[in-house]
Image (cartoon, rainbow, N blue to C red; front, top):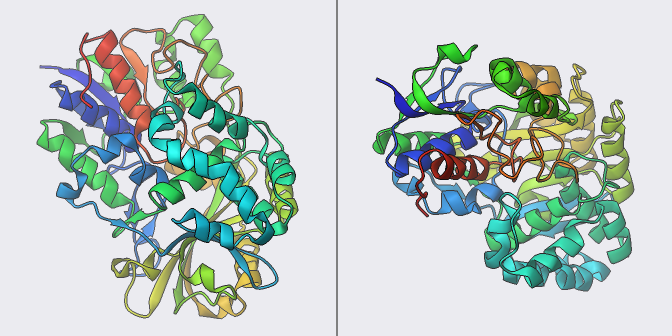
Length: 477
């Protein structure tokens, strides 16, 4: 007795693919090597009892903003989004901060002389987002709203550093844009690096930058519960080393990046397709530091205390230098640090009097260097006295991340470089990027469009391809 579809890997994209297929009435089984489902969306007590830390992803503007997640009844299965008063703050050495508010005018007010330029650049895209979000968060297609998409593209196709220098005059606007662009994990002078700050800023103004109550794992748990309610199965502690290990099915979807796809199924592919996967480019890695502190972080800038996410890196010049350094295979003494303080707004994350802090910085691919001191120095820079509050630490190097998830090659949590070559042509240049050269094998990971982020859209679009190509039927929604 087989299944219509088997999904290997239970990250947000694997679960989204399974849900889409199950909603269409297919029998689906998800196989996960770890003891819990979730991939990059898991939560665990990494430090002290009662302190819940997100193992990988933590803040999810693309989660709450996902057209796919938005239509699922996940609140019925325990998912609740926590919205901090300020989505993101970016402090500077003079004790002030730029801040990304839900309200675009409030955001502009924190940017001083750059406020009007920020509003002129983004307000039209914020207003048109409903028309273009499916295009931005999917595979390449002919735009249904070409004028609005062209307005987005005119900014998105530029380098972040070049756009910031041309559009903004002061350090506030430039620094804010650079911090948002650093999420691309690319040098900021690379083309298309402005796509990431546009999307993240627009999402802040449309839906915020929330996180799931009690941790990212709650999103995975809700997806699993909904899948099971549709008749799907999830088998954990079930590693897959060979295709022969899989139960019989008409189609297999792989929530894996190209290197493990080749290890698992490379023998089934045509040589031309196999060569494309072998040429797929991975990017820099990450070093992650989870902390438990006593009391709140003593930020000098008040906006940081009310922000769910804080970008620590200062000026455009500093951030660009730090990102370029990691890309060139060196470790920055002053890395750009992404920090989240979820327990500040969600008391299920830590016992009374304690706070859980989530941070990471970019490092060379495959790095095993401990960046704890460098990260703590950056926090202390904007929050003097912070170090005295630390009660516990848990660190993961780039090497650790690859061991944790073999799809994170070299610690690349983005599923591969998302430069101009690999925005749509990921993992290979094909009319349908989710299909392989074997008609029964599909890829549904973040190594397919639209790329990295907890949004489930890669899995959703891969499942739609399976439904139309293999089962000759349409997906719901």
